[in-house]
Image 1 (spheres, rainbow, N blue to C red):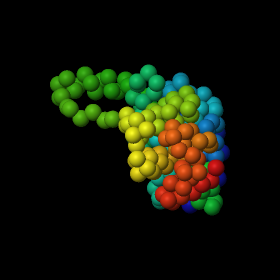
Image 2: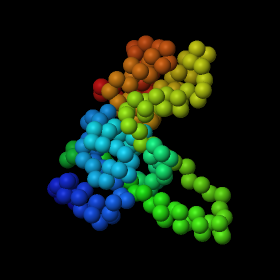
Image 3: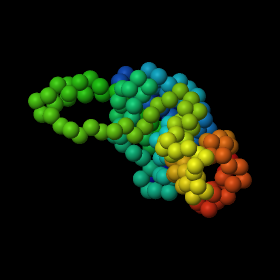
Image 4: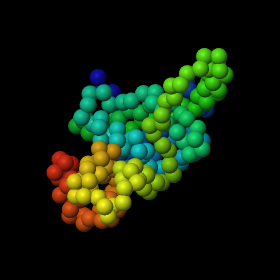
Length: 210
C-alpha cells in the first residue's frame, strides 16, 4: 500500500516518541556528497544539514535497490569519538521504484550498555559486535578511507592489472562510484587513466550515470 506522508511531520513524530537520545535523519540520494536535508537531534552524531551519506549508506543504496526489503535495522555504527550507536536505515522509493531518499535512525543507548557491562562482569562474554558504519564530517573522508581499505596496504606500483580491476570492483560494490568525481580520484590513486577505469567498470556491469 502506498500513501503520501509529510516527512517533516513524520520525523518530528518519531523524534518526540524516541526522545533526545535518538537522531532522525533524512537523506536526498541524488546528492550523496551533501545528502542530509532534514535532521533531529544532530548532537548524537555531531552532523549538520549538508553532511554526506555514510560509507554503509552508499553500500546499502548499491545493494538494496534491487531487493524487496529496502531497510536494515539495529546494526552497529560508531561516531567520531568512538561511541557506538544502534542504527536503522530505510530506502524511500518513488512511484517508478527508484530509491530517492533514505530515512535513518541512530540511537545512543550507551546508558543501557553501561548497565549491561556491569552485568557482564558477572556473566562474561567474548562476543563483541564490530562497527559497520562510520560517521564523518566530509565525503572526502569516506573516499580516502574506502581507497585505503581496498588497497590493504599494497603499493600501487607493484599491483597487476588484475589487482587493480579487483580493487575497482570492490569500490563499485561499496557504492563509491555513486559519488560525483570519485572515478577521477580512484583512477589517480591507482595510477591509471579514467578511460581505463571506465573500461573496467563496464566489464563489471556498472551503469555509468555520472
